[in-house]
Length: 86
Image (cartoon, rainbow, N blue to C red; front, side):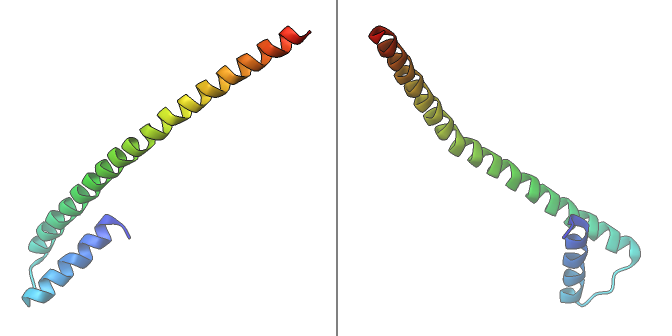
């Protein structure tokens, strides 16, 4: 569902709840207000989710680097030991 259709549905429900039949200009104004609120909320949620994902994944990224370093050290030690056996 698009922001526009969500806003149109909400505006229609507001008018119905109030029992009013606004003019075209009022409909457009209310629709614009609701649409801005829906978009602002979506952007705020996006920022929150992006921050949460970065916070969550940064720990994994750090862990991945630590594991990669340990693997590299073990690989280097293995190559050194195998080379010494020749």
